[in-house]
Length: 390
Image 1: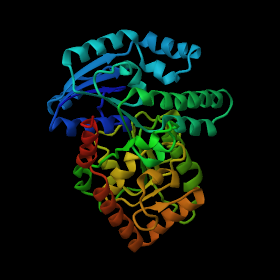
Image 2: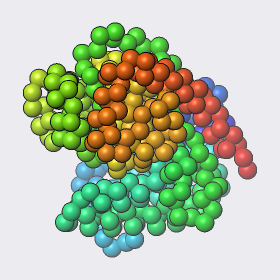
Image 3: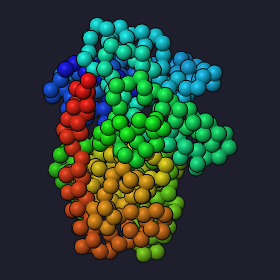
Image 4: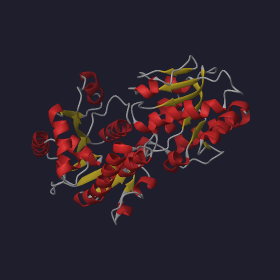
């Protein structure tokens, strides 16, 4: 089968969840099928990144989004009912190139990741199409509105409403639909949302096999794109609300905040030598290996958190929120610890730092659970069966 994959970002490097999902799905699909990747990009794409996909036999095309049009097309959505981010990623000149490329390649199937790309191909009806919602973007935007105020709150609320309506409306333009979790599927308003197939993320053996530091430098570690609002809020929460509850008992507690593009709010958290903000790390596994406990106090994100899969696969006991665990479905006190507020996070961390048996049980069970439940080959096989349906 020849599969045309349309992405809103080039799927490398793997510093964002959508890139990671797209990259692993593409690599798995390319083992048995011909894959053409068409990626939009608002920044330069390095040849070394393209070479990564070339090694897997994937044909790549990158279309640079023109900077002036990014803002103009976003602003124009004031006059429409479409989400602003759909406007940001859509440019008429690029659509003509994509449609011409599809005509030349004559793929058997078109696979779009995220509703941001749907406008480009929604009116193609002679080729079967699958839309990967990935997350319920509308719910994530509403959650951002809940913790904002003033103009930001208004803008996030408006965009959330537009996204919710668009998620519903665009459903009927595609033959098949996928999403990352049941939790996210429940937020899609379409009356046939139960037809959306759950395609989970996976976790590679390269995490499970990575050697852990027997004497990690840091007690706590949190990773992610540190310019992404849910991650920014999580980092601030750990430093401002959780650590103060622990310093009396653990005066030398050390925290590692690791990930690309740290926002100034995150940089400002490095107030002493006990808190390190790294920025981009070539191999994120070294960050997980450097911390005793992985903490992920996510309150406003959606989807399945890859950072939890990675930390748990490496054998680091993890503490997270009910919201983040809804997509993961790990069992509290067996393979993970669940905490809803700062006091509960501090208590969970205290228990793991002082109870060696609990530490080993959560670490071991968490690793077993993730490796058994989340597999890229299994997830992509399910995706492939869906694409092959009439």
